[in-house]
Image 1 (cartoon, rainbow, N blue to C red):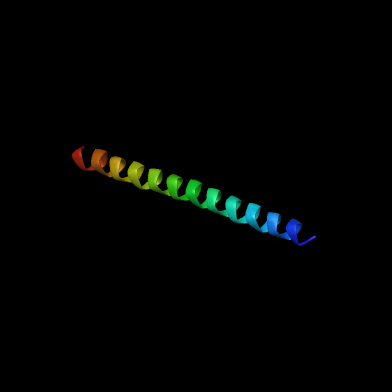
Image 2: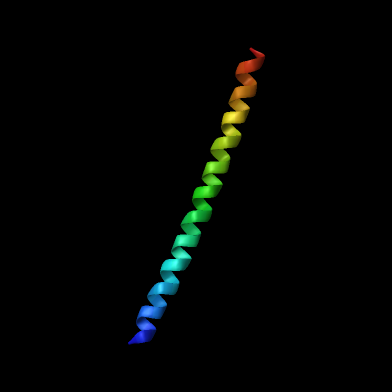
Length: 44
């Protein structure tokens, strides 16, 4: 039954990596959106 635990660990690590990448991509988009909105407010 060690293989069951091993598979669960690998799947958990993959899920953590995917969620982390999605979160970083969303965080980057929010930073870009804030920079764009700052440029628009400074020109008005």
